[in-house]
Length: 557
Image 1 (cartoon, rainbow, N blue to C red):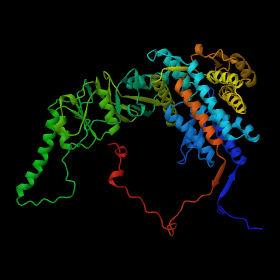
Image 2: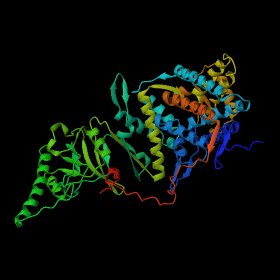
Image 3: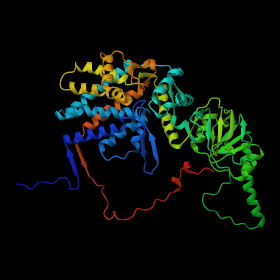
Image 4: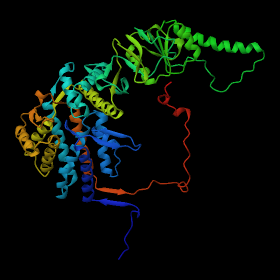
C-alpha cells in the first residue's frame, strides 16, 4: 500500500461537499433569525453591548449586524448584504437578510436531493428576472411634490422603527430636509446628497417634539469675543474664509538678527500692519459676520469688533461648506482675492443661542438654502442615536422617491404578488429547474409571514387568506396591516414602499443566496505568512505626523 499523501498542512481544516452547504445555510438562517423579529411595525428592539461597553438599542437591521462579531464566514457575508442595502438605498436592511435566509432555507431540501447548486442558482436567477418584471408591472408612479403621498411613504418606512410612536414628526423632518437640499440636474433628474449637505445635530435635553429642520445651518460655536461682538444680526453679510487671520509664521524656523534696538519695534509693527491689512481687505466689503476655518488672532479680533463685525473661528470644513451652500457665499482662500460676489447675503438671521449648556450659532431663515441642519432633541443619548438612525432611513427613502418616483405596496403585498405570479409561471417551466423556481416563489412569502408572526396573529390562517386573495396575481395591493394583523388594502392604508428599495432587496437577497449556494469547499486555519524572526519584535508605536491630523478632531474652543 502507498502511504497516504498529505496535501494540506495539518493545521488546515477542510470541509467540502454537502456539509459545507448545510453549514452555510444554517449560518445564514441563524443570522436571519437574529433580526427576524425586528421586521414590521410591531418589531422588537435589540440591545447590544459594543466593545467599549456602550449600549446600542436599535431595530435597524444594519445597525444590529454591524455590532455583531461573527465567526462563521457565511454569516459574515450575510452581514455584508445589509451593509450594501444600507449604502445603496438606506432602507430594507432587515428584509434583505430575512429574504436571503429564506431563499437558502428552501434550497436546503434540493441540496439533500442531490440537485446541483448551479441548477438551483439558474432557477433563482430566472425567478429574480421575473420578479423584477412583476415589480415593474404593479409599480405606481407618484408626484414628488404631493406632500401627502410622500408622507405616507416615509411613514411606512419609519412605521417599522422605534420612532413610529411620534407619528409624523420624523417623516416631516425627513421630507423637509431632503426637499431642501435636492438639486435639479436637468431632464427631470434630481440629486440629493444627504451625507454632505444635511447635518444632524443631536442635542440632549428638551423633548423630541422640539426637533426641527432649520432653513439654514447650525454650528457648535460662539462668536470669538462674546462681550463685544453682536450675537444677533438680521440679514447678515457673511464672508467665509479658509485662511488664518493671524501673522504668518515661516514654514521652517528662521532667525532674525536685529542690529539696532528700534528694529525690534519695526518688526512688531510689521506684524501688526500685516494683520491690519488683512482686516481692512475684509472690512472693505462691509461684512457682518466673518467665519474662518483656521485661527484668528486677538489683534484681528480687535479690528473686527471695532468695526462691529462678529467673527467665528476654527470651524469644520464640512460645516463651512454647508454654510456656503445655505447663504450663497463662496469660501475664499486669501483675503486679497475677495469679491463682492463672494459675500453671502442669502441668510435672514444670524444669532447665537444657548441650548442646554452650550452655545450654538444659527444661520437661519435662508432664502434658498441648499444645505440644512436637522436639530434633534431628546431625553437621552441612546434615544437620540436611535432617532438619528431612523431619520437617516427616512431621508434615504425620501431621496429614493425623489430620484425614482415609483411606488409599490408595503405590508408584504408586493412579495405575495411576486410569489403568486412566479407560482403560475413555474407550471410552464420545463426540466429540473421547475422545482427550485417554485421554491423561490414560496420563499418570497417569508416577508409577509414574518410580519404576521410579529404582530401575533394566527399565521397560517392569515397567510392562507392572503394567498387566496393573491391567487392569480390579482388584488396586488392586499397585504397585512402590521399593527393589527388584519388583511387590508395597502393603497387605502397608505402603506407604501419605494420601488428601488424593493428591487434592490430582491436583487441583493437572491444574488447572495446564489453565491452562498455555490460554495462547496471551506479551507480554514490559513495563517498569514510572517517574515522569519518578525514574530517576536514588539510593533513600533505609531507616531502621528502632520498629515494624519484631521481637521475634524480639533477640540472646540
